[in-house]
Image 1 (spheres, rainbow, N blue to C red):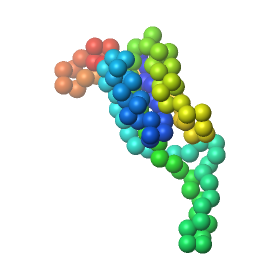
Image 2 (cartoon, rainbow, N blue to C red):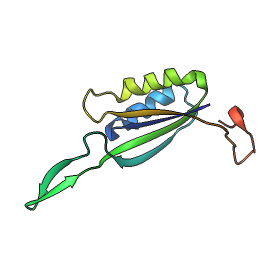
Image 3 (cartoon, helix red, strand yellow):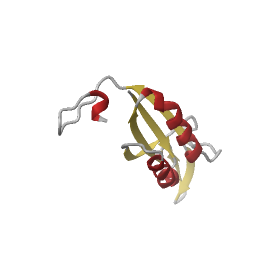
Length: 112
């Protein structure tokens, strides 16, 4: 099993969520986060004072899936989150060692 974590632009949240549901993704967690990439922010002026804005709002999707679904899932995320501009986001894929459904005690892929 894998955990696919995608950090995307906030304006892509609804489009990506609908695309994931349309492709039978069984469940996901969505969080609003702030962060920065290689650019480390930018400078703006507020009332004549220079202010460094080094984090921008993003949306984080977390999806647990079978190993063989990762390629399709990452391709789908790229297709629907892409704008071509700096700040489109990143996708991270991690291995999940164990899952337990709290309500039933099911483990492994049965708990997804």
